[in-house]
Length: 194
Length: 194
Image (tube, rainbow over all chains, first blue to last red; front, side, top):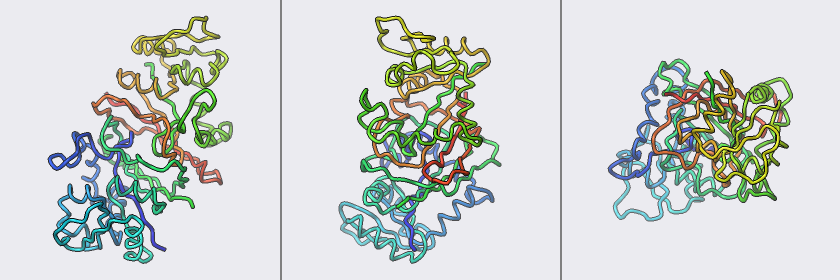
């Protein structure tokens, strides 16, 4: 069975960027703080393992904002897997590489599922994650929780439906071997309960 | 050295109550979902251990809203420890039991520290936690993270300063022995880095 997995790094207080994110500051003011754990992405250990998991996904579903701020990944996020960009407005020019624009969230989820077979489609971007959560299309949450309170910025969990979404914690890993406590990221995987 | 420890239960999306909390619904609509882990508070295991930790604290600092919604705890939260209620307006009637009203956050923190010696003063209530965080008076965060997205309600981390608060994850425990995944609470303790 296919799985749609939201994969996001967030501060303990739930922010995925600092404030005032935009083209000049893709991660917002101070938002780079969230991503120093990626320095360890190629090391053995928890951070290397979760990064390898992300590279093993067979499709990417991205929000438009994340896609643009990331320079459209040059059309290839990893290994040439299909990239479905959820957007309100399809750009006039042809999409680069393996990118396809989709305006409907259910269609986007269906395309992602069809592309991965019994594998995983990874979701990047708070807006796309929220849209897919509202649509009941998220199967897993993989959260990299950074030990910092940012105080403000863009929240991962916002604009959700009022219905509770029950979860099961299926994996937890912590980068204990790193000297700097600021890099002691907690990697949590939850499965959405149906 | 004394320690001021925020001790709060929250959903994975950061809410400590459901929406529309008030005298008729102290935990907000659906907010009771957050507290079923307390069914295990007297069992051996992680939830029993963290609950025992909370009962070992030597003072309580509470926000006014939490205090009122909890029926003022009849003046005794646990073991008769001093209770400092942070409030904008001191009630006209004398406080019950070991309660003292305090209007200044720095004074409230100082009173809590003086009361506990080298022990721990526990903080309950999002408003009090936020005020103490803004004042730089929080030493530890003990969070009981419940595997559910509430979607809305009162957030624990809100109205904070823009300055980053760096943390160190010093303890993590999970209630693995419980059958119901909805009770697989993750108990996380962070120390504030100075």
